[in-house]
Length: 254
Ligand code: BT5
Picture 1 (cartoon, rainbow, N blue to C red):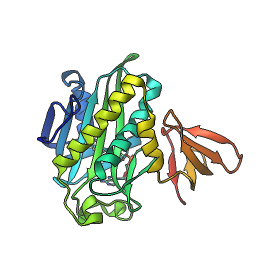
Picture 2: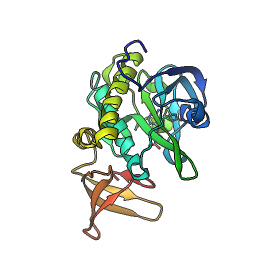
Picture 3: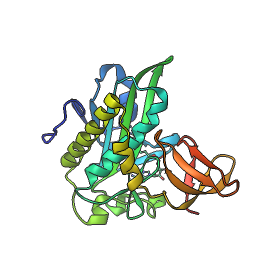
Picture 4: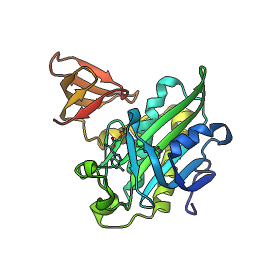
């Protein structure tokens, strides 16, 4: 990464040809990895999404990156890291496209997903050993290489803009924005710089969606993202406004 302008985020870089999952590798090798270190793989054979879902990472045409953090962050502030990462991606990608965020972790271009964020934590007992921030970006993926079941909801930067993305430049830009937000977040607890981007670029805010959990499906008006990174919604059935966390929900238009 020649264009890297950060102090510690992205230093050092491990580049692998093929891995099952950069996040799994980072979690398994956490004790040997330092704060800010990143793992990149040309290809993932078992990329992970949230809640046990799969992430497809076509060889060479997508970015699979895991960033290791070893700061002591209070448990309740960890969800903010997903928002911080999503905002960093928006800023990094604005050299190519104006992307949106579907709270909590989807990056959307022209109504289709081009990237996703997966934040994982490793605890031993009650103490936090480290945080692994995984991001997958469909940079130069061909529509042909997108699995059949994702054709209608996934795309790549190349497919939407008909241009190539220089992965080095994109990763360097992402790491720089991440570091800026992260240093402010740790130092002065500043969350507004990145949460304001999450709100401005939100797919959901101002619209009505179905909020679906294991038991039920309820229609809600999506209001905003609150200072904890939660989504503020007003349920239509009760007319009550509540803050939801990302854990076990899905949010759908229909
Ligand atoms: C995510 O989960 O979006 C998190 C993706 C994180 C991937 C990175 S790659 C580096 C690091 N190492 C890993 O093993 N993972 C991280 P979620 O919100 O659960 O979305 C998963 C869903 O997105 C799947 O169920 C599919 O519907 C869809 N999907 C899978 N692969 C996709 C792709 N390449 N592009 C767009 N959508 C995809």
